Image (cartoon, rainbow, N blue to C red; front, side, top):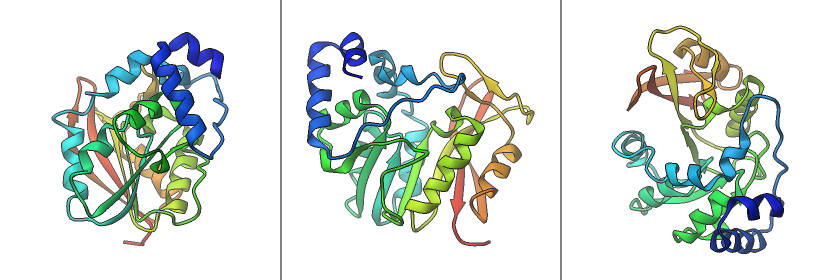
Length: 231
């Protein structure tokens, strides 16, 4: 891992990432390649730069509306550089935590002032948190990048670590067709809302979809609100 980091990061960023790893007590997971997910992107400084602005004016507005009247301990899953945690910090009723598989991304989150005691390097399909550690959890533009098996494991971990509902912003295909795994810059599933609902119902007894203000030419954003309570 250190060799990869040195190749991809300028010395200052590498040093910050190294200090971050030393500051936390959890072990960095090995990145597993399954032939579909391009996990190396999450150690690319260019991707880190993109994550700084990706949800401006759309998904980052949505999450504020979803969390504004809530209180408690909240986990940002695949939090990247911590931009959304920084945005939500305006709500003092929330105790915000973040996790990601990439120590490079989390080093940027720490650099922006998020305490390392609230950041964890962990695999979202097998998280290092105890059962019911959080009141709520959310992810933004992340779940669609997992394999089908990974999606179900991701959601199973969400219901395990969260007492309440979890919220996940995903793309659904504009034409309602299941296009499967597509590979533009960052590979992901571009499928129908029903396809996603079936995945969620393998784990959660209740799922509700809300429109997101995010969209592109082939997809529309949806918030998949997964509840541990039966409807």
